[in-house]
Amino acid sequence: MKIRLTYSALDDLDLLLMNEAERSGWTRSMDVEAQLWHHFEELSRTPALGHLRQDITQAVVHFYYSDPYMIVYRQEEFAITIVAVIHGARDLTAVLKNRTEE
Image (cartoon, rainbow, N blue to C red; front, side):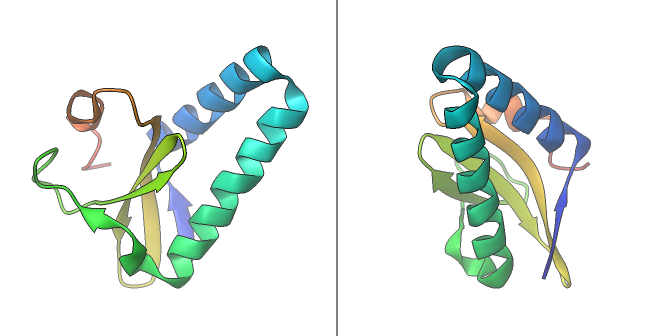
């Protein structure tokens, strides 16, 4: 399956990598990026790894934890679309409120 990222997910990725670089340096930021892309690829091969969370959103999106980040994605016929990549401690309901339709 192909991997797609919404513009919001790309913004999330940029922001979290910049924050990681400021906190822990560019090497750590690159490690985090590699870890996340590894999980994106794993999800594209096995999209059922994630789970639905109807307590957070009624949208049909799957959640996959990549410590400490939550990858939120839609499973489509020929691709997965990453909707959000956010820190697991954030208010997921608030962040996802307007994102699941992108």
